[in-house]
Image 1 (cartoon, rainbow, N blue to C red):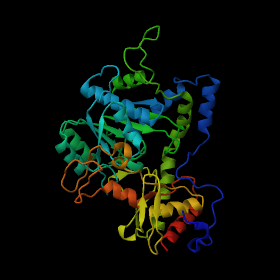
Image 2 (image 1 turned 90 degrees about the vertical axis):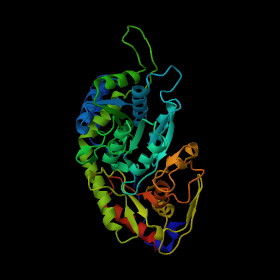
Image 3 (image 1 turned 180 degrees about the vertical axis):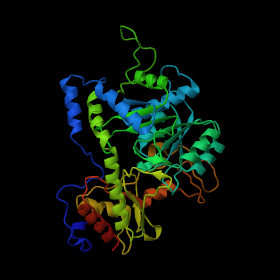
Image 4 (image 1 turned 30 degrees about the vertical axis):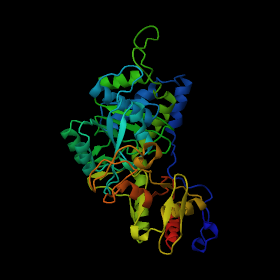
Length: 431
């Protein structure tokens, strides 16, 4: 890492006295009120008024009939996979996953929590490449995937960084092939597509309350459904599948996945501020777009049919302006070149002045754990290929965005003056 603080390009820039975060929690007054009430009334476990109320609030915002509060977005994804798996394939015997040996189509450019629950249930993720228009699942690649694996019946769809994907096209393909959609809206709470909230488009959908999300409980998540029977099953599974007997009776596998009333209290206090947080994040995005428009970069895109929640502001460096950079599994190397820059150079410069950015999610097909899984692109010869061999005629969109993109400091508490400094630092990286 270069010593940016002594680099002549950055002369006059002062290190931030307090860190400018990528996306940190923003607390208000109500969170403390509902947490205190839970403690004072002694309802601190996995039942209580906070859980009941926040489930109702979230369901109403999204437009679903039911929201089930769970310990994390990952827990919600796991139970969503289990739910659709049993709907399609029936209940497995104890000790076997519901997807044992079955392939599942998954968004490729995402956090691994999207994909791991498929493996928890014995499934085989098949990764669908990204498209440039929204940085989400490519419908053309998805259609190609069905021509290669027509037996697949589950699609796990992500709305990356709070931007809705090409939902109409993906739903049309899913319906044509009789496939169910698990919608991972963990990053996109409050975003909409054609006026409809994300979380409404899956046969079952999930949200996250992780510490850096648009609203947070420090943890927590929700499973969204329109079926009372499904909501009841999720509540049962998430509390160790206890039967309605006077003793502890268990007839199927269960999990300790229920949301606590304390976490629900934090979320209950956060929910009223969802739109305020979105507006603040939107302002951050707009300031970056205006402040960087003279550079050879582009902001993360979205379609005219969608309204993102602007959770993270990201940028993509034009190919012609990329300086040389290589990445290993855990290390990287770049060369500073006049008039050019690279994601890791910019991130290192931000770090040197006490601001936090992040690389784009490394696509799942590039991860060592999933390297031998099938990966489908919309270009080239159309063969299902592992990362061990990608045809020279293929364009690996996710890998390209990963190599040229970065997530910028997007904290909604960042001041315009702080953001101006960050924009200045980015400009100087191209000098």
